Length: 119
Image 1 (cartoon, rainbow, N blue to C red):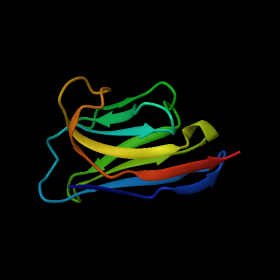
Image 2: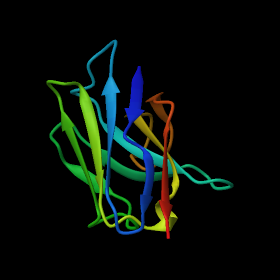
Image 3: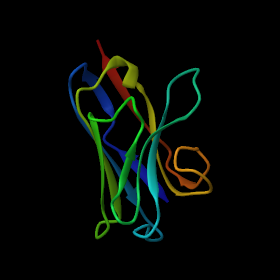
Image 4: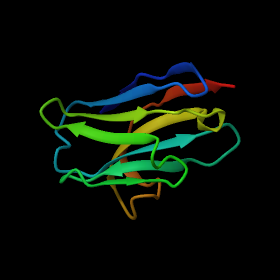
């Protein structure tokens, strides 16, 4: 089970830190990722982190977002800085991709947390 937290309302230029806590099993050896879905849009890739802590980002967030993981806590994070109104979406964490990292076909998903960025 994956549970996200840390979403909320923030002004443009602000920061938020999302957390994804895993329970029931360890994901330390799994690829984990963040996706987001805005109203009326498809779920899109945000970032992914491998077991060796290699990180990958969508072009739209590169340089502003940082993904990390704490295997001892079985938790993944997404530090989001310089937020923009277009970052507004429900953010989902996921684990164990079935195909490419950026494809939203992971085995495990959280329930999502709302991030709203006001202009």
